[in-house]
Amino acid sequence: MISEELSQSWYDDGFALVRNVIPEDMMDVLRAGTESAMANPGPTSKEYAEEGKGRFFTDHHMRRRVPEFQTFLDDSPIREVGAQLMRTKKLNLFDEHLLVKEPGTDNPSHWHQDLPYYELSGTQIISLWLPMDPTSPESGAVSFVRGSHRWGKLYQPIRIGDGDLVEEADSFDGPAPDIAGDPDKFDIVTFDDLQPGDCLAFQAAVLHYASPNTTKSTRRRAVSIRFAGDDVTWQPRPYIPSVPDTPDLVAGGPLDSDQYPVVWTAS
Ligand SMILES: O=C(O)CCC(=O)C(=O)O
Image 1 (cartoon, rainbow, N blue to C red):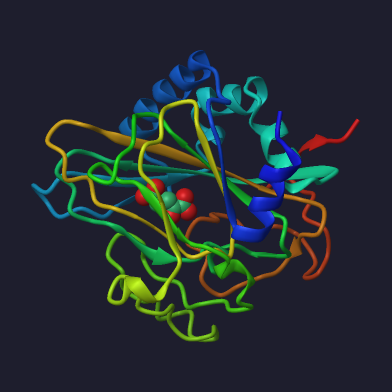
Image 2 (image 1 turned 90 degrees about the horizontal axis):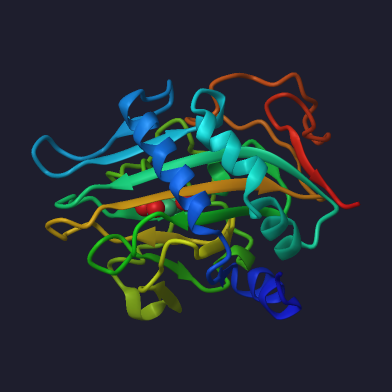
């Protein structure tokens, strides 16, 4: 399903686009789950948009309360996509992150890395970003700084919908550089024409961004399914907004647990 070349670009660039890999019936399952999750937000959900200015809704771990997300994980090819891109023998699931930008939402998803938000250490950490609607620069396209996952930096986390630095997290390599303020200095790649069924894969330390949804009527619903592979261990951190419970794990040790279930192994 995944070529060696695509897997290598995930490792080298920090991202890779797999076109037309999720069947339409599985996208319908995700859309149905998204409506349920938005009607019944979870304990770590957030609303970022100002009143009257669209809606930027995020939520996590939906499979625990919305059956469609578990169905998607069980019945779609998403685990094989993640495993083949990372060339891992095992996958632990650690999050499903819902990111919905309704028409008229001014908020970008500000430039950030994901790794500082995870209690994980390692390189085989993948997000599989799945658009449920056609996605354009006007509706919330995702951009990356190519190769930034190899800079050896772990930048201070921000609140992605408003860009504020998180004060609990000052032990990082300072704030991320001002990419929005000086875009020509960076090798930015934007995926501006994604379709439902496409899968945009990226590594946890790559700097990324998504534009606001300035359209009048196009929704931008997306979910990032997140897996860890063979080289990943547990690494407690001070600011973890998306993990509602503390796992009984040892720092530097394996992840396998109820919170980080093994969801795929090589046969
Ligand atoms: O979809 C977005 O708006 C941002 C995506 C993102 O930051 C992520 O999935 O980590």
